[in-house]
Amino acid sequence: MCCQGGMIYCCDTCSRSYHQDCHISHIDPESNPWSCLNCKTKDMWQSCGKKQPLHQESEVLQMQMQPEQQLRCEYLLLKVYQCSESTAFASKPHYGTQPCQGTQGPVLDEIKKKLRSQVYSHVGGFVQDMRLIFQNLKAFCSDGVFLSELEAKFEKNFQHIFAVQETGQSMS
Image 1: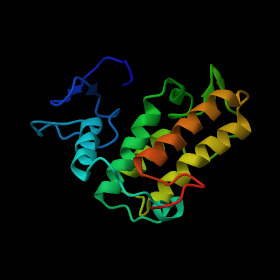
Image 2: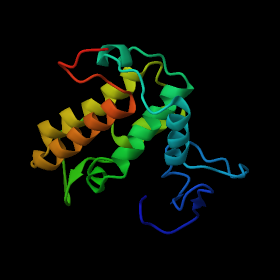
Image 3: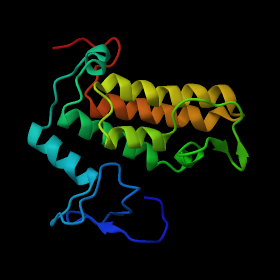
């Protein structure tokens, strides 16, 4: 994911490999076979069936952080990390070589730590922190174009991963 060297863990299900710090959920070195987050979520969705029931966004945000929701949030965060633009706010917010002055609030690495420590009691806390990142960076960084694109990807992935009903779509 990060394209850096060092000690990596190879998924036994696919060809992906991760550093302990790069994988969102903790990697148990003793786990054999080990499947990465991409493979775990793929298996989860296949076992749930192809068609998930649609939910209102407000309903999803109020969901308690059960193991399935935790896995979905971890996968959603992984999708953000996999975008090259995410390096701008993984730890200290910056755009290019210039730091974004005045930004406050969470960064991706802090959200990852919160997920790993199971700090979020509801899906809404995680989503709120993610949206706060985009809001803060748009306010304090000079180029909002790449942020808008990444935010749109996040929102699209959020809707897909949590089967959020699109606005104006009637529920069957």
